[in-house]
Length: 392
Image (cartoon, rainbow, N blue to C red; front, side, top):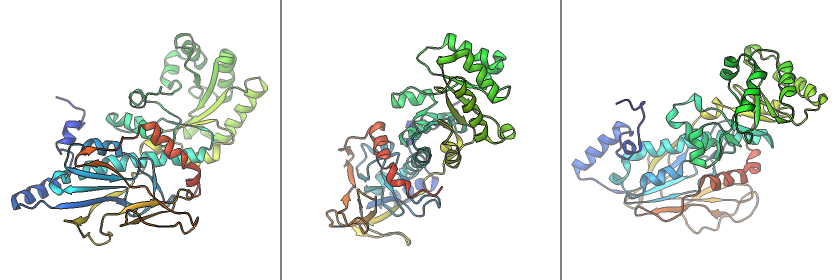
């Protein structure tokens, strides 16, 4: 049976997505009668040069994976910023009860955190301009919903994939594709048909670069739809683009002098946060694709830091169970082995708070898993504080 190369939930739970050396480790330990109580910590050593922080995401899936296993799980809240060497998740239990899931745990966290961090970076660059996630077509369709979910959680104002709307309870966004205009044979006629047949509650966003000059195509569509036209989108290929900002400025001028000041201008097509910075003075919204969907993952590692209650770790890793303390003002963070430490921020001089939370106790989830909206709000609440860390 063709399963589109997809590992389903049962495959993940059965350990089929693990690296083979973990199954061989399990076999050796079982046959040798070794099964020790360990503490394993997830943290990242080294951060991207452009920004020294990440956004922790993917926790909800890890908790669902480990629910029912005889482990305790601690983590910082999903959506929290973190810095190098900060423990984001810690698991305590008999190694053989959860060790086989290291690959899946890291996969959940690394991928979701990478997408979420990139989405936030784009949103910080855009200020109050709209950012939409348009990158699902650049990845395997099995994870299209996951991509748009974490892009939205990271700060994108909308997304394009239908399945993500089921995960988030929000309507997807989009314009019209080039294929509709090509099949109809004319941009204006295609938009008139769209207007005639599609629910009036759906915004009329016209793609205006399929056949003719963007300026004149925009004027034709605007004069045909008038007040019903919400926006136009520039998706001009780089080979024909020239100066995209100048094109947008010309379109803005022509729309304004004809009384279409309400019509917004969107841009898409290979854009990232640097393009957003360049264009946001004239562009009202951005469709960001590959740079979010194929964002560099956060490069977490998962390491033993205690065995049978005694601190131990590989070289290059600090041993012992740690709690993460954070300054609520400037986001300074530090790990410590003391749960009730009196630690003060070296910059703000304010007392740091312990943000490490126990989510699972002996296999039972004891802390409510945050909804995507709560996680999103947590991320956006730190948006301005994180701006200073981004080099654009």
